[in-house]
Image (cartoon, rainbow, N blue to C red):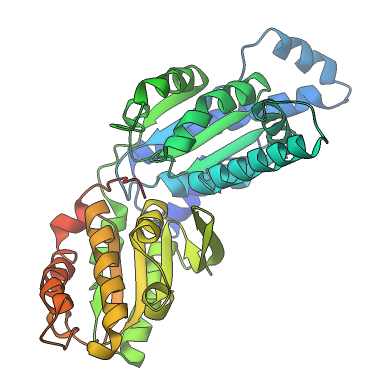
Length: 382
């Protein structure tokens, strides 16, 4: 592979430009991704009708299917960064990079569309999985999953059958996760039915633990406070700086989180960080399931403009309490700008919200601590 197409070369450039510190485990992962990419490049050449295509095709005919890579480890170890570098240079043209939950939402939509077609009589195939798998394989022979963790029983029951079909069609999987495959869907309902998928995963991907020495996300968070008050230009600028540190100055992209048919728009997200205004999260009819879904999708939430709340904002306060509970339970990180310190945000002195907000204020303070910022995330069913 040409040097400019190698993950390790991109990694070296980032070190020289001071974007990253040298890390031997990250470098080893970069080499593993380059080895996989070399195999993908050879596969692509074997499929091309070139003068040497017959030679490579003959070699590949007897070769086993290409094994993908499963990068797992704690938050902030560089898994997503390395996978993104790999995806950018991946030699195969038909490729897809997706958050795991986004991919599964697409799968559910395809299954639903197939069942509607079956009802309408436009297809006679009862089982939707083979045609859905074929359609996905036609579009993408390389699938890169970010944040692979399974909390939904519907996903758990589909994965085994779907990936049996995808792997049979030669699809290669690269994934990042906070947990080793044997811990996926841990304590989930009917987990025994999910375990054959885990066994299949071990046959089709190499497992690589990214046990880097440093939590780089904590370094970025620790470079400045995570709570800014009062509201104003200074806090706005600090929030913009925090976004830049956490996303390597990414512009941000739109995204949609779907919860039981409801769409939650995310107008600004990148690298596992989502940024919202207070009103987007707490002035809308959202509940615990919605907030848990956001926490399962993003390791860090940024909230701009948390106001002081009195009786007139009682509903917003209720939602804010529920949001912070969801973030705290999943160990989702918070960066926020607010009109006051945590214990001064709710100004009413009577009612259930006043009592509940004492706990919320305590949690908001704890969420700034180094122990909380270093705590591993917890996946919870929405």
